[in-house]
Length: 180
Image (cartoon, rainbow, N blue to C red; front, side):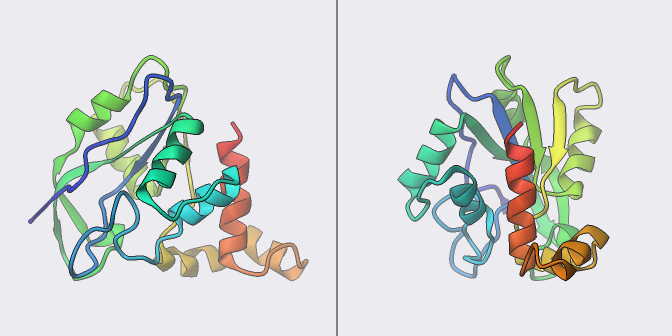
């Protein structure tokens, strides 16, 4: 069993909420903050490029969230891993992170972003009456690249030379969705 190592982040000005699944344990720790344990997750790199802000330190990651009015937390508080990897499909949620999500769901939140369909499904389970608009971001996890490579839109864009990689495609989609 694993218990979430981080709380949540929000400011009084936060108007966007990004909800992930659960941090990746890299064998020694979970990294310095959300989405950094494996060292391979592209979340911070994507946000850095979308907002043209650096992301190398914890302070820089917090600054992205502060400047862009992003609150951040995860759907799970306690989990068990079915296998020894960080994929969402490997997570068995033992307890939802409801207290931290509730703390983030202030009157200012205008849009909720999920880092995967898995997260959206669980969110809708615990918040079936949610009235805040939502979007699903393409998973920033490297394991989702195979899924993205199979998407018809990705294949078409790659064929036309509009993207060179699944990362390029993700970045386009993050720019589209986070511009809301």
